[in-house]
Amino acid sequence: MKKIGISVIFLSTLLSSAVSATEVNKEQLLQESHQAIQQFAKHLKGKLTAAMKKGGPVNAIQVCNEKAMDITSSESQKSSVILSRTSLKIRNPENAPEAWEKAVLKQFEERKNQGESLQKMEFSETVEVNGNKQFRYMKAMGVSQPCLHCHGEKVLPDVSAELSKLYPDDKARAYKKGDLRGAIVLIRELN
Image (cartoon, rainbow, N blue to C red; front, side):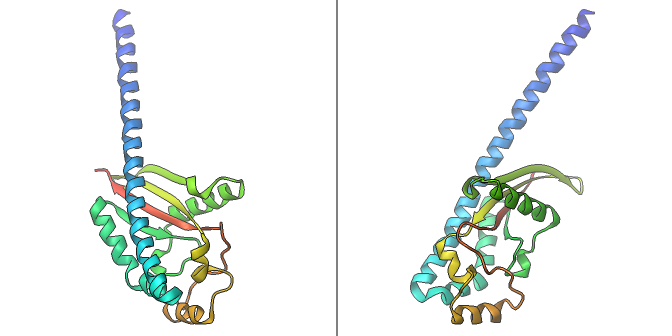
């Protein structure tokens, strides 16, 4: 009888240690994800802001078209993760959401409609894909005033023409300030 009691206590201690380690690991993963996404967003925003100052929205479109994927790749390598951007209304077909991303984006939209702040909105999970564990993280992106130059309800004719030329199937228009634009996605392989 004592052996069972000791085993139950020992097992309980082991399980609580495992839960604590998992929680710490998740907290560390979240912290690292926040840092990687902040760095990525800062880098991309810096390039877009500089392009806007230099040549207006049409110039910024060129940065998105020619440099955004390189910035994404570069920041992914620095952080040893896979970074991407996605939306329910995509501009670049390479940014189309996977099924799980689409489901999270729909949840984000529901959460926003219930009053949750986009600035604090995030999602994370650990899943197994083809026998490998992955940590997935998504951070909501809202539409701010500068975004409206290229994503708003009314864009200048030269901006509209450039967008139509570069992105013939563009769906990323008609946003209002404060709308959910999409999300930055981070995937970290854990195995």
